[in-house]
Length: 284
Image (cartoon, rainbow, N blue to C red; front, side, top):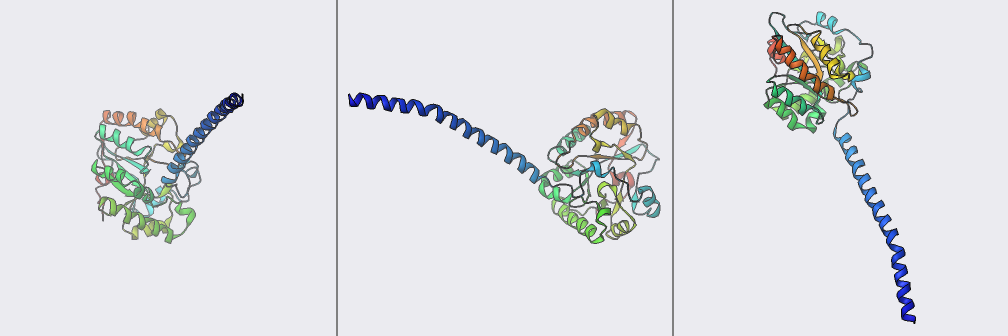
């Protein structure tokens, strides 16, 4: 009799623990999965260096300190807005990479269309993703200096910061691609007289642009394409972005290239790199 009661008690105890164990197991698996995705997202953000001065939008919307047109007039040997209008040549340029989310898709489209471009890269991202920078070079593109952490140099107002940002990026790029670039573009395109003079002292050409795609506003691809197609002219230097801050999305930029490149080729334009367009050296 006692044996039978013991069997019953053991059976009831076993049955009562099964649901609890199952729920606990499900909850544990859910917690593991949640932690996995949290860490994945967190690591992705940590691996992508942030733009030191903030994202292009809204930073670019602020009042520019001095127009690049005025700076080009003051420093014609250093600041360049566009190439000669004597031939149907134009240059595509991309800022803020390398960005593993978008840059390689841009490179794929350029390769498909046999289009060379000029990439102004951040040193902090180049050292994080050297293989993408190496692919840029192996695909026939030219690399320019876009500072190390992408600060707003005008807001910093410090020549020492500029020199540190430029030199650190130059050293980083030299280690990756084997040459010291001579091309510089300021974050947001923001400069003033003393900054231009310091960059010239560091033996750089400052490459600005004559056509702004405004892709940093993340408009639909057709709008980005129209911003370019409506304003392009022989000798144009076109500004686009293959990277952005952690919350930026360059998908529309990528899609717009599928309209921009064929349309401009159909109009008879030849895509070249910035140094080819300007007939200037790209390395020191």
